[in-house]
Image 1 (cartoon, helix red, strand yellow):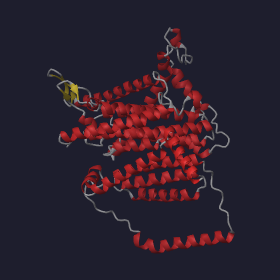
Image 2 (spheres, chains in turn green, cyan):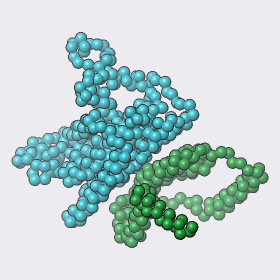
Image 3 (cartoon, chains in turn blue, red):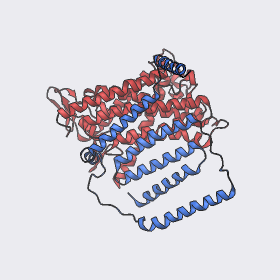
Length: 183
Length: 370
C-alpha cells in the first residue's frame, strides 16, 4: 500500500470519526460513521486483509449501519440542541478532555508511531488462508459464535412475535383469576 | 505501467457498456412497453423529418436519446422547503456511484494477445470479486434511503424506508445464492468461474452454471430484480400509492440519476447472471483453436477472433437478459408489501439455505472442488 494512500485514508477515517461526535444531526453522524467504516475497510484491503476489508464493508457499512438508520428514523430523533449548562461546568469539561487527550498523546505517541511493513507469507489474508485458519485452528470458537448468533436470532423472533388471540384470552383469564384471588 | 493504462481503459469501457445498457433499457421502457401493451409509444420527435417522408415508422429513438435527456437536464433543479440541501444533492450520486464501480469486476472476455502483450479482459481482477459485488451492492442502499429522508416529504420517506427494507432483505437471498455458486466453482474470482464454465457435458451440453445450479439462478434473478426496485418489486416507487416514492421531490438531472441507477442495476443483474450461470464470455463449443462441433467437426478460428467472439458472446447474452428483464417488468403486476417480505424471508432465504446444504453434500461427495 503506498504511504500516501495510507495517510490519506488514516486522516479521512479520523476526520470522519470526529464528524460522528461533532455533528448535531443524527443522520449526518451516521453517514460520518459509514465513511469511517469504509475508510477502515479500504485500509484493511490495502494491508492485504482483503476478506476482512470486504466483510467490514458488507456487514458494517452495508447492513448494520442501515439498521442504525432505521432506528434513527423510528425514534424520530431531532437534531441535537446546543449544549446547555453552566459556563464554568463547560469550561472545566473542556479542560478535563484536553488533559486526557494530552496524556494519551504523551504516553502513546512516542512508543507507537512507527510504521513497519510486517513480513508475511504469500496468500496472507486471502479467503483461502482465512478459511483454513477459521475451520482448523479456531473451529470451536467459530461454531460457538454461530450458536450464539442463532440464539440471538431466536430471541429476537420470540420478542417480536405477535401474541395470538388464544394466548391473549388465556392471559386475560389468568389475570382475572389472580385479581379475584387477591380480592 | 501499460497494465495500469489498459486497466483504466477497460474500467471506463465497462462503465460505458453499463450506461449504454441502461440507455437500451430506457429505450425498451418507452418503446418496448408500447409494443407489449399494443400502443404506439414515443413517436413524436424527429430531427429532420426525413424518415417520415420516406414512409418509415418513427422508432422513438430521437425521443429517447435526444428529446428526453434534453428535457431532463434543462429542467429546474428544485429542492423542497425544509429539505436537507446537502444530502438531497448527494443522494442521487450515492445511489449511482456504487453501481457504476461494480461493473469493473465483471469479466467481459478471455485474455487477448495484441502486439506481444497479453491482456485480461476484466478491468479489475480481484481474487475476492464476489465479495466486492456484495459490498458495493450493499453500499448502494444509502442513496435511496437518504434521498427519501432528505426530501422532507412523507411519501418520499415512506419510499426510502420501503426501499431500504426491501434491498437489505433481498441482499440476503442474493448472498445465499452466491454462496452456493462459489461452492460449486470453489473460487471467488469471477474470471476463474467463467473459465470453469468452458467445455461440454455429454458431448454437446455447454458446462454453464445454470445446468448445475438452476435454483441459484432463479434466486439470483429474483433478488436482482428486487435489488433494482423494478416491477414486480417497485414498492419503493409505487406510482399509484407513493406517487414516485423516494424520487418524488427530485426533478431534472437528479431524478434522471435515480432512474438511471435502477436501469444500471438491472444491467448489472444481467451481467452477474451471465457471469455466474450463462458461461460469461464462453461461446458454446468454441475453444482456443476453434469450434469443436458435436460430432467431431473442427472449424479453426484465429486466436484473436476467438477472444473477440468471446466479447461479442458476453454482450449478446447480456443484452438478451436485459430484454428479458424488461419483459418481466412489463408483464407482472406489483406485489403487495407483505407478499414481498414473505417471498424474501420465507421463500428465497430458506430455498437458498437448502440449496447451500445440497450443494455442500454434492461438493463433499465429489471429493471437493480442488
